Amino acid sequence: MKVTLVSLLLLFLFQARSFSQSCNCAEEFQYVKHKIEKNYAGFRDKVNPKTKIAYQKYSAQVLERSQKITSSAYCVNLINEWIGFFKDGHIEVGRNRLSKEKYDADQDRLVAGLEKQEISTQDIDSLKKSASAAGIYWSKDSVYKVALIKSENGFRDYAGVILESKNKAWKRGFVMMELKAQKASLKGIIYDRYYTPESVSLKLSQNTFGDWQREGTAGVKTEKILTNDISCKSLSDQTFYIQIGTFNQRNAKSIDSVIQANQAILEKTPNLILDLRNNGGGADFSYRPLLPYLYTNKIKTIGPDILASEDNEEGWRGLLKMNDIPEDQKVFIREKIKDMELHRDQFISLGADNDLVLDSIKAFPKKIVVLINKGCGSTTEQFLLTAKQSKKIIVMGENSAGVLDYANVRDISFSCMPYALHYATSRSRRVDMGMGIDNVGIKPDYILTPAQNWVTAAQQLLEKK
Image 1 (cartoon, rainbow, N blue to C red):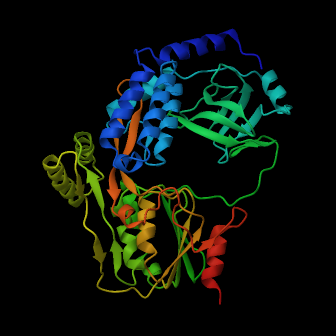
Image 2: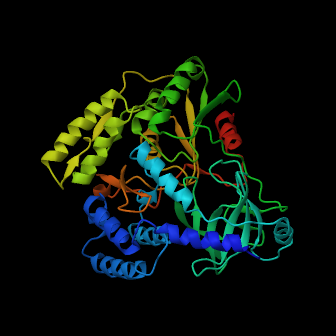
Image 3: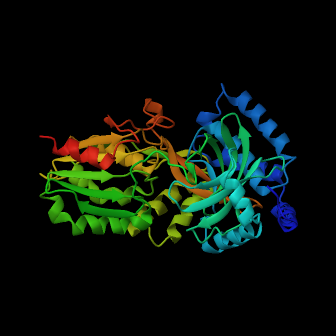
């Protein structure tokens, strides 16, 4: 694959711009390391007398490697590797969510630093005939079409260049992937919709890498998973279907509105399918409207404790500025902030263990199937722990993500680079009871395979005579 002189110049400018504000990878790594050690609610569990020496040795190795890195994206990739020590999906590098002004400023810096490469019609024709990993590929959701080209620079062997995109943020010619060939895999970076580098290791086969399919070849047909925030429909006179894509607080009012609008149907239909696939979580209060319909008996909830560090207090204080947080939640947050001020760097209770007891049990729906997959995490898993205590509930699908023991994620801006550190500020008391679910997830009652239509399987189970 030939790269034009313009592309080479742009590549040089990309690398130079990455540290145009004198960002130093070693300094950024040490900053992130300090923030995790001071504020992450799981640090004392993960770095204990048995693991402390290994942690210190590994951190020293990462620091030494960081001193040789001169690209912000490659620095984040190294930091992601270090974060892997904690085995916690609630620690990650992501976009800055602290304020719109900060987010916009970071996005401007990231866009300015994007690498661009020109792909000619001749290049595309050549890639279509390629028998190697290089070629033309589509994302699983058909949002992106990329040219995977040979483009070595020490970090990578291949670059994934956008040819077509339904996402306006990614334009033709932008480099979206930087991947290095490993044994039967490609490892490296894929930039997300916010231009944040995500570290990946993707299985490589003749016509696929990860979920990306070579153009002109047929992949395994699977059921399309809805991506709406919320949707619903009647599948039959026996079964109603509700799909919820997120429990984010911005979706709480929509969830409540859909439940209220369909109250009459819910209270006369025997079966309900609740499709939560790829619902990564959000806020617990978002699923409140569902509880009366699944309730059959007392529901026990084991509460979490929050680490009352100065940064964590500031992170929680930021929630008070959000318009989509209900006022009763803000009253609760203010009380916890006062407790944090009085118990600096100690764990304080974020909520007592309690039993949920409702006044009545709804006759309908009689049975509820909850569909879950590995994309279900955090608040969605808290909902599952609640729902599984009901006699109405049947869980179908695959194990959930296993990202809940350390939760209530807050953000801290990087010291220089245009990213933010997302990390957990609370620790569930389930951990001390031997009831942790991290890295294991919640197991379904019935396992489904990708070859099955999960909604059809759920409906058949519910309507089985």
